Image 1 (cartoon, rainbow, N blue to C red):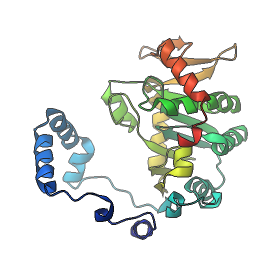
Image 2 (tube, helix red, strand yellow):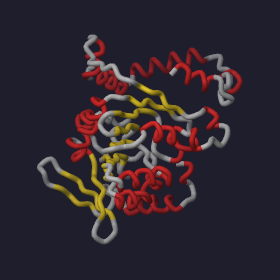
Image 3 (cartoon, helix red, strand yellow):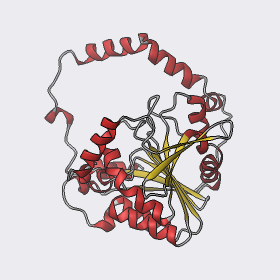
Length: 298
């Protein structure tokens, strides 16, 4: 991690802050005032209390956190990516696929922003047709906080479903207990922010990378490939047992359109024929955005 930090620190993209930021004489005073306001903010106090009463925080504070010694590999984009066109084999997405090697059984993927593009769509569809079970979770339209990203995502759903990829879209839930159980805490009450995937139940990748063109081609991203069957299987178990209530499953309808299956706690289900909890105007706006030539920015 330190070596990777040095690569970025010494890259041509890094500038001393005093060269590009205006010097503020009242900087420390403004910072102290901001800290004082934050401490007095009831919402921030509630957040702090939630963290401090959380199971992980209490276990860590008491020295009882159940740690596991495993092999971890740092994967990162080349910092030159921000300055020039970088060959595909130096991109994080390409390096990650190469490091993963042959996938035997399954891929479980969570990405807040999921616009797979041609490269990843071909990868996922070829793996699914080869017998690999692939399950994806991203934000539904009602839950997303970046509508243009959802517009970029919708055009890939049919191709993924045709190949056998299972697609789930997170509900705009107010029930934080359920999202805590999933280990996929939203950044707000309505929007997923996790970026993680597991492979074959024995390794898991956690990082900054979203499965979208911006992460693939523009942003410099990094992450950790963790050789932990325990972590990977925990994620897979969440898909098996908890995703049914937390997300809609997107499926093909008989007429070539899509349905959204909402499963209920009592075992029943609701079949939505349009994006759940959205308006005609909202869906029309998404469709219009999807026609614009901006996918490379998403």
